[in-house]
Length: 220
Image (cartoon, rainbow, N blue to C red):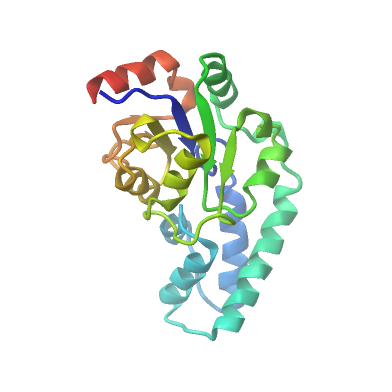
């Protein structure tokens, strides 16, 4: 039986919803290249790195470009995105997040962030969630994006726990796969038919409690 002592959270779509800002910035980038970029296309970008996101957009448009131009476009997209992030407030925290984090803290569980975002710390600061976290592993600390398990394995290491003591909270298929590749339990946040590889799927964190996590631990 896995005894859960640590929780590792993805950021976008689990704690806060910055997806709309990402989509807006990527759509502007795509339009500057003459590429039609839809919300359906945007689903492919969830949970992947900035560089890989641009590669996908170029694939959609049947285009290629030099590395230097790609790096410049990634920076341009991030600048647009940060203009919106700078205006974020705690009102943009998703349902149930604060209460669940408070309960985890009260029960003595360790909490880390495991996100591809290089802006994770800024977002946590803007939404006043930063004090709940014992460690932050984001795009600045990892070389390989999800579904590679690096971000979650580094999270466990930063918390000083083994992978079997961790449960991951993810809204993207690539993130669920990363958790499974790390040998960790995983709670999917979203649609069960999409996140079917997760050990449990909830609509949002308002459906969770420490007791429900313990029931998950007893099943494994």
